[in-house]
Length: 378
Image 1 (cartoon, rainbow, N blue to C red):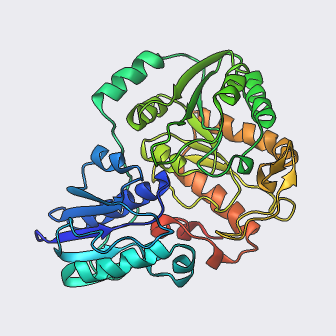
Image 2: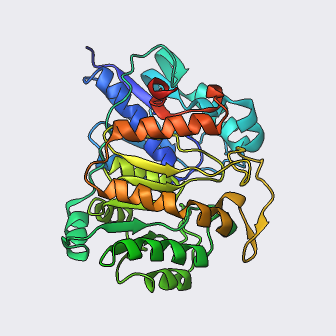
């Protein structure tokens, strides 16, 4: 063991999930050598706060630029130059990412000149420095946030289901309010005394926001016999509220990564660009995968399928027909996660088997942080 320094230079797009990925990698480098000093670089407009709610990151730095616009020279000048290891996000060196995000290309060019690594300037996944995969990430928000959440969400006998109706993409890429009301009716028919905890953020501060309007949230709240609001409160309070919920229900969103890092099971109405690829050991989940032949998705950035007509344009994997077909499975997933018997190993075996079938057993199309899916491939 040594007192070597490691800088995880994890600068990519700003959604919350990428910050969670960064923390997972930092944990792997710390676990491989507990004496290491771990530094982390993130985009300034991502969920930097998350790094302060862990115990395995010693120093956090931010860089402020738009991935679509090359930053001014010296964007990383305020970050110490000398480290034993500097480890980049591999996406910062992918040609197709450079074509989409010229600002990212310029940032990594500048960082290659700025940082001086005594051992190597490399990328995550390289053989060195030593890395231990497969660790349980734990986010622990502030004591004030926990006090607030206990007041908002006192203990009850029925399930408490957190609902985030959409992520930070365009509104048409998520279900209609009509579809969400039907989902909530299905859940409350099953659990008439369930409590729904609504999550989201409207504040325009340069970070991720939720594209659902206040009126839409009001419509969702009207479907539940008991509703608690955790909308437009701090991220620490939302995470503390999540820790008092039996599950989070949402489409694919990076906030789901944060929920699992906070220890809350995730029920995913899957679709849009990416299949789920972040899993937190010990935290169960259930991903309701779409029929990608009937409802095209997972075509990666820049290749969105044509929208369908569903109260206006709608992403095919989020349309009413797809949701109607998959409501029984969504309910089964909720029942399993609320049963007290859900476990991570079963979740992984079930998910990876179904995802492999979805992709025609082309395992090269499947990815997960730390390759956690690989032992479960059929």
